[in-house]
Image 1 (tube, rainbow, N blue to C red):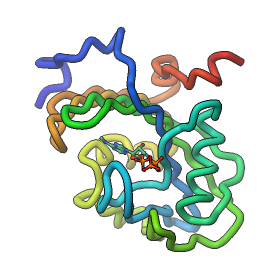
Image 2: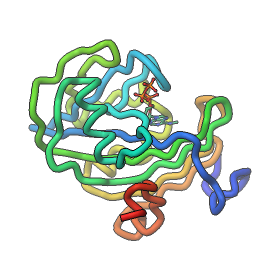
Image 3: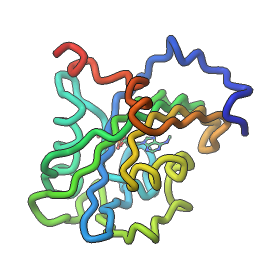
Length: 180
Ligand SMILES: CNc1ncnc2c1ncn2[C@@H]1O[C@H](COP(=O)(O)OP(=O)(O)OP(=O)(O)O)[C@@H](O)[C@H]1O
């Protein structure tokens, strides 16, 4: 795997089929993860999140997904990153990643997810998508980021992740938010 060689994706013209979101709520040294029971990445550990519905902003979508998956409503979400996934076996995904420190409600298991409060030092990367280890620790440390990954099935074959305020200039945004 190389960060610079062997990428078959024309990222300048790349467009994802699926706009999606992820939320990481951090409180008292723990992050609220889920065991995902349905949809893309079923069986993996991830943050709550899911597809953006037509007419929704990314922020509206991530709040709705937290309500559906865990019966909680995050407050004051902060956008931390974008993830661009060129996939081999499923449609490409463009994911907007948020963090929050507050929420209303009690994380509750649902048909879609089991809540997993996880110590920041004990994140189970071996049960997560392969890209997570390349941006999640830095994001939890407060760094904004932009990540591009080419996958062959579940394996990363090319990646580029940038951090800091410069990374935000690479964000593609969400159609609704760009229209504002
Ligand atoms: C490839 N590497 C990856 N690394 C980290 N996270 C990844 C990911 N690939 C997909 N994801 C996330 O997985 C969810 C899928 O969404 P998914 O659950 O299928 O959508 P939704 O809840 O709307 O489901 P239904 O369409 O109702 O089944 C969504 O949060 C998306 O960001």
